Image (cartoon, rainbow, N blue to C red):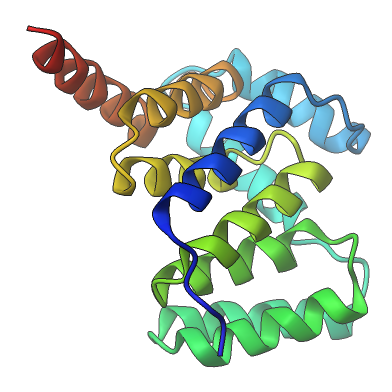
Length: 186
């Protein structure tokens, strides 16, 4: 059983991740590069299609066996079985440690199980491997918000919006957090 890490340590780790993500320059595939360029300039009619294409690229491991582990982990998570999902994602990571979606999936399973420290660590690894993974960034922002660190959560949402300007969840969160922070400063 994983240990729960105190919120302060989670916050420190997440802040370090935020700093690394904002300056990271790890190369990604040409297909993803083109899709991210499209996403940055997308309009209301095309951004969701492009985002879905990016997600499909993220899910390509290059191995049918690894794709099966990813699918099983995702299905277990969707069924509400975080422990089983974490096991599938851990097996995926063991066999394909350079495949970012394994870490992202396991981070989601850990988050669902209330294990913030391990979730942050896996989000960190996801972002090391895939610096523009805006879904991993959103997970990090959610954790920051849960740890009552709205300034850090806002910074992460702003990073998401640099990558995906029409991401409605990040836009809504940015508005909400800005209002919250304005209220705190009064």
